[in-house]
Length: 254
Ligand SMILES: [Zn+2]
Image 1: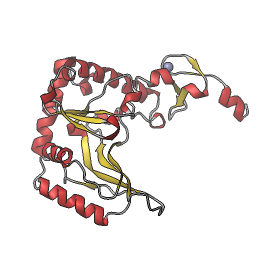
Image 2: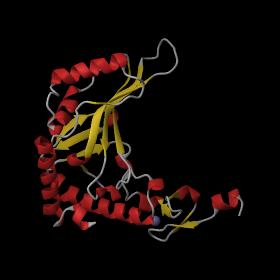
Image 3: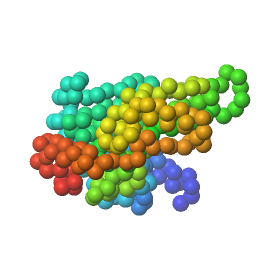
């Protein structure tokens, strides 16, 4: 079969069995296909080429549990229990410290029909990112975009759900000469990490030095890493929330 024959031929979705054309499906790592309708049940951060059929099914089961957890434990929290920070373009990050989890609302998460929470204890790094504007036109500001980047690295048995580091990029400003950053978000993440020495002043200093000297696209972690005490504390809070909502932790259920 030639190129066009292949392109227009129908393939069966390995999840639901529906026959779909090229525009309504994505190819998995092992050559299987998932239809767009089933893909709405995966995370917006799901990358089909990184999953085979078995791990896709696992990811779908995870999202099902996540959605249930969200409805039972998170949806009813009041405003003071969800610390919310607005980002540009009506995007938001919300921290639920008592669950040890956060939510992101942006164009990527809106691709999914399922709600997803991110566990604090699976955060690997966070910091600011900067994209310089290219070109030399006078009306161009120095930075095309600056923002917060959180890298999630699922481990301890959860790497089957996300077999790659998930990079969450949250734009804070576009087209600026000197980014101001919302220091409160970085401070809150530093508090979660419990790292010593990440006071507001130090964060502000590190932001300034980044602007002056960092290579394009560099990601400077604000904190050295999770303190063991805080990681344990937030792991327990997240596990307890999962047990209340689902009877067992998600890891135990998958
Ligand atoms: Zn399907």
